[in-house]
Length: 303
Image (cartoon, rainbow, N blue to C red):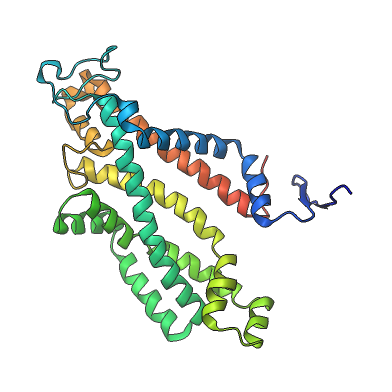
């Protein structure tokens, strides 16, 4: 027997077909695949991740090996993107720098999301005094300018890749916590939650098995944008000398060479590749986030 389809049509929108028996995850994936920019972003990120994982093979050189005889050499067949002031291969540093940027983005967002899941769920579900305490703590942290606070903390604890990950993660939970709390507040009053309470299901199980799974979609979208923001912040900190310490390759530390007017004018290959890498990576993550948001929102129209 052929599968039946349920068709929902809204004014001024495209037709949405919900196949009988289709899970919510499969429907989201089907909608995500129709988002061309999102798929292009995912494809780019997939290639970037593979290149970062196989960096020794893709780079072909040691990213910290110095060769003073070929310092500031223009791109050649031997050095595809030229060399920097210390004679290090730009291509090799670009590929190995992808490891740093992706690691900072993923680890820092994982830390902030873990904090968000705990605080946002507790505040939204229990409300009352606990909600007030968590939200006032959130307000206090949000009062301080984010970048200034991050720079101050990194200056105190010292610049390193691990400190950058920890600081970005620990200070990046406020906005997503407020978002999750708002979602939990609306979901906890739905009929199926009230029914679970009525039959004696524990609050712990209701929170993590019934409420959170139905409130987490906006948080997943926020997490993708958080990765992009963390990559930009790390690049800025490394540019200022407060991020990843030399000689570890980082896109931000590579951009630090652009602080010299001579390099800006005469040695474009030193700063344009890492700048383009940051630009394309952040755009790809944002495209993927847009596609995920539209795929998880049944009201969105994907052309």
